[in-house]
Amino acid sequence: KGFVNQRNEKFNISNLILATGHSARDIYELLEKKKVLIEPKPFALGIRVEHPQSLIDSIQYHSNKKNPFLPAATYSLVSQINGRGVFSFCMCPGGVIVPAGSQSNEIVVNGMSNSNRNSPFANAGIVVTLNVEDYKKYYSKGPLSGLMLQSEIEHAAFDMSENALLAPAQKLTDFVNGKFSNSLNSSSYLPGLKSFSMDKILPKEINECLRKGFLEFDKKMKGFYTEQANVIGFESRTSSPIKIVRNPETYEHIQVKGLYPCGEGAGYAGGIISSAIDGVNTAKALSNKILK
Image (cartoon, rainbow, N blue to C red; front, side, top):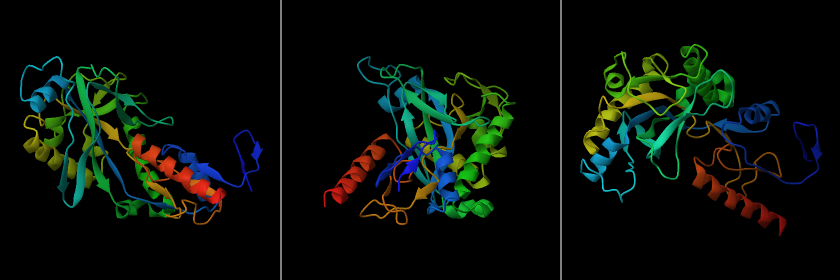
């Protein structure tokens, strides 16, 4: 019983809550090596879209002049394209796009907003649902198949950047029309952008859904589809592509007694709030076991 950490220190315990993040890929590899049951699960993949915040304000507040007492406008968009969900994720009003890779030689982007939400840009992930069947190319990797798809895209983006952190990007209108962008709009992404055709990296079905999705979103937010916006790659860490399988009632791993997979890394949450809720529920489940 117990576990050994990276400093080779052993802790003799009967129960362990495993609450790593979904970018802790070495944990998945360790569990696979130790034959601890894990399985692939659906996740979402796509890009970040970045508009001028003033444009989003004018669309959402129906005015070209924003009242100074109103906050930076937000949006939430969803559509069904070719049987897949296409939706906005982690919308950041008055925010910035940041590099979010967890290892060398990969490019991943994410978004954030400071408390004042006063950046001149608005960004959001626009992502497409991927099912386990979409990982067929990687089935030889077993439960790590979705992880391999993520990794291939992230490393291809880094190779495109010529070993820098320049993120691949296109103007939104060029992306939808399958054109190379000869110039790009200003961006909050500080390492910088490099004009690149996303369809050279993204799977064909993801490209098609994103292109159609942007046109659908423009019907809901007139002006959303504009050459003033950039799409920036890649939003690949929306949630874990792997589930560490647990009993739905006891929250305990179905194979390893005393192991309690929890949160994003376990495949049972996809953000700050859902991770917090899963943490509370996991702690309650463990306390119920101990206090019996």
